[in-house]
Image (cartoon, rainbow, N blue to C red; front, side, top):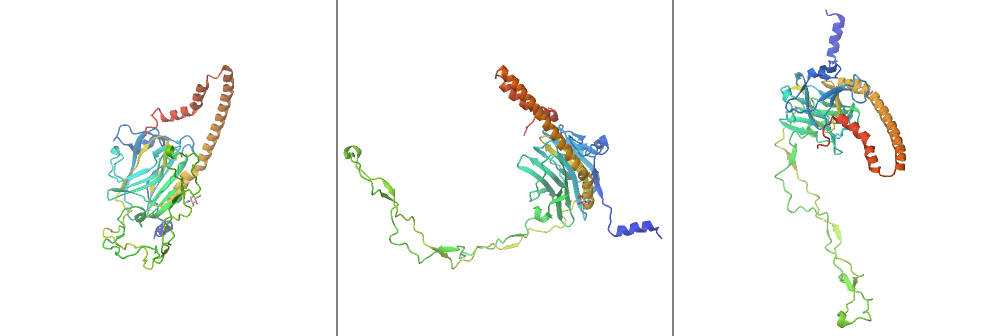
Length: 419
Ligand SMILES: *[C@@H]1O[C@H](CO)[C@@H](O)[C@H](O)[C@H]1NC(C)=O
């Protein structure tokens, strides 16, 4: 006889309250120890450095610490390993937070999930991955959420446009892939896209194709309207477009010997009716537009395992960033949608308001400081004017100085605008 508590536990288990499987979870809550869990690729010698920080503004100085890209115009290649698993017959949830606090101009904010066979020390842009997911921004033209699946060796991009967040705050990105081959993308725990893998990616050739045997019959009449055969051109229709001006008179001082023969100027004929066109009537033989009949595509074979991968073993940040400063945090890979939502609530959800507040305070302080500086400059300019007006150009240079200085501090002397 089992003790009662154990019996109850057993019953709960049977009732489907399965524990979520957490394959990977990284919140960077233990200081520098992350360096032992993450591996920097040596594929190139000049990959950018990540540093642990909560950034310029945050909701919680400790909990909001994450990995921040710290050098401009660099490739980044960092990854972390977890126990290999297959998502066969399981839901797969990939989730993390991204904060582009640098006001990003161009750079990736996505993760790649690699098979466990990846050599982390050699990870690079062409290393084969299973799934790539997350935001990507480059100029005003590219602001999207990538969802790329590797299918039989080829990277297949989603057919839909999912817009990513482009502000400076922390956002939560979630990808759910289910064993019934459906998916969902959430931003900040709200659904932004969903559907089936088969319809939203070109994994498979189309189900139906145009019947190559079928041809439009030669006598198929697609003309909805035709000329009315009973309509004829009126006899008096034909009139020249231009006629000599009947009101024109030869000038009295016209000298035929000197000026040549006088000709009246030409004017538009008011009786000209243009080209005659017969009336249009409904075509009695009209059959409608011919539709090419479709047949089942012989190349098409359904695949009920589009979603499934033999192994996941590494999560990587393989990125290019022009202006650095993006912070990645709160990584989660699990089989439990509800658990992921909860985890999102407890991380991103718990600190987002305070983060916003801190940023607003900083902006307000910055605004005040700027105001004071502007005032001071105006006063100084007032004094300068007494000395004469030679200083105008210098003054203009000074105006741009404060902003520039701030930016250069951030970039640690890396050349800007390399792209
Ligand atoms: C997450 O937070 C939202 C908003 O407060 C709430 O509606 C939702 O139920 C929460 N989800 C979970 C799983 O706790």
